[in-house]
Image (cartoon, rainbow, N blue to C red; front, side, top):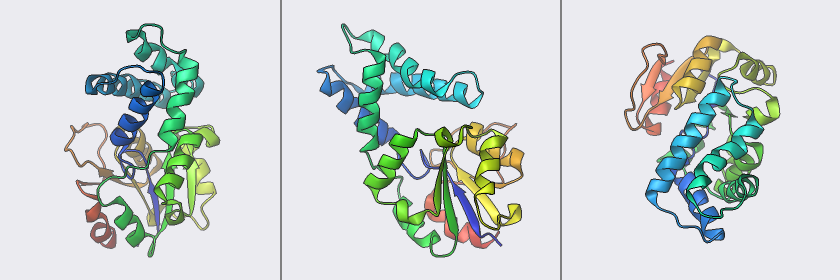
Length: 228
């Protein structure tokens, strides 16, 4: 019987694309720089590729913070420095609160029967800010943030720390729920956790990384968890 849920935040609970769009447009506007949907697409691609490098240990978190904007801002004439813009963007991002469809209702429902722990690779400042902005902090027993831990999903050290902080932790009574094959599912599988992939858009699969279950809607979770 499942008692503990390790729950990813970005693109699982938070609608990260919506949060990202709000933060990027607001940050650019604060410097009177133009914004378009193609800018968001380009930035998302740059950002995603650098987070993949972080997961592999090929870039530091501090380098990621500014390098993504060094690349992105090169399209503008006389932009702010990447360091300054990164801080402005993160301030804007910390104030966003867009959630995935059904996220709040599912958190409310599951928190009555399970101990929920957030597990995220995001920056501490932005993740804590968004949790507060969305008013969902009360649903979590604790929030585990990779920046504070010093290791990222899918690294074993990240999960070692999390389970060491969970009272009476049992691998057999725990599930990991997340959207990312490379960080959530890969890391959870390697650690021996039961993994559930949230895949609302039917994104492509990787035959080398297979979750135990897959859902398209968060509304599926309560019934699914009862069967485990």
